[in-house]
Image 1 (cartoon, helix red, strand yellow):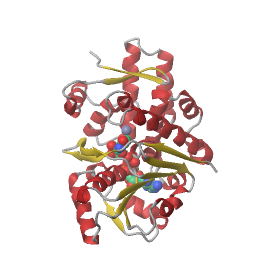
Image 2 (cartoon, helix red, strand yellow):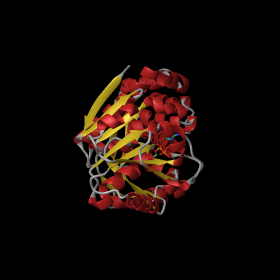
Image 3 (spheres, protein in one colour):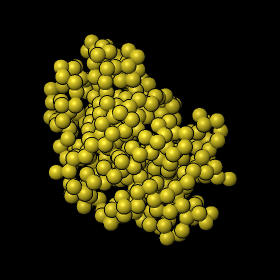
Image 4 (tube, helix red, strand yellow):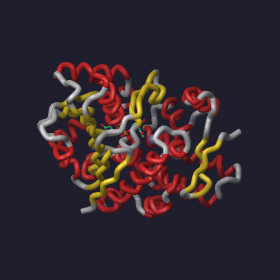
Length: 332
Ligand SMILES: NC(=O)c1ccc[n+]([C@@H]2O[C@H](COP(=O)([O-])OP(=O)(O)OC[C@H]3O[C@@H](n4cnc5c(N)ncnc54)[C@H](O)[C@@H]3O)[C@@H](O)[C@H]2O)c1
Ligand SMILES: [Zn+2]
């Protein structure tokens, strides 16, 4: 059985089939640990979570809010949690983003925080790199902190109950990792479809490991997004706009659309070969991911502008110039 451990910024990321069972061993002896999860995960993985104390939130991007954060603070107070308590976020990227934020801020910071990443997207992306927080007024991650979890368990066996659509959303972020800087990962994804990836345990572990390594390498070089880390935003400029404006697509799907759009624009400007553009879009389509949206260019431009207002008006695009290579540029 493949089991890999990757370290990034002091956090231990363990990837493999069945690694959720290592949760007890990851926690310091005798420590109190409270599990934070959402309703779907509690229903799907209640048995794996064992008898640990639990706070359950309503799922969905619309609940990734400060109101939910406050509910969790209240839950912790009711349970009598103190600064010595650990918080374990068990779920997809929404749970892990919110758990990291709560663990970093409850009583000015809890003793420790770990994640059991149970969606593919959380395993390959959200739970790696230390960004956490919540949305405000529908704008993504407007409140948040950088805070590395002590550990992340990426148990690919837990993905068995993950709905197909959510699985594909995770693949979108894996394809993104491949396009940014891992041709081998891209080719592996390109060569296999969803069914094979889900059925072949080792293949899935290897793909998750490759995506985590790529992200870890970038985060290690640049934790706070001054340069290299921006590359991870490939597809996210338009993606976030699409995610906000349309209720049709989840995060990974919106990123697939954003990636396809930036590939088309890059090819139009002669920066990306048409063949490479078609390979990237073809890989997304192979997994049933959307590659086009039905929003007006004006609506997208306005949402992009607002989404990026925190960056003092300077909008930077992550542009693929080949499979496995992107550049960061301020277009137009
Ligand atoms: N912090 C970061 O660097 C970072 C990176 C990428 C994405 N994100 C954030 O992650 C979020 C998206 O994450 P997501 O796609 O995992 O969404 P999610 O947390 O909503 O999970 C997707 C759905 O799958 C369910 N689920 C999760 N694991 C399951 C399992 N094993 N079995 C059955 N159901 C399961 C969840 O309950 C949810 O309904 C977004 O808010 C995005 O902004 C953060
Ligand atoms: Zn993303």
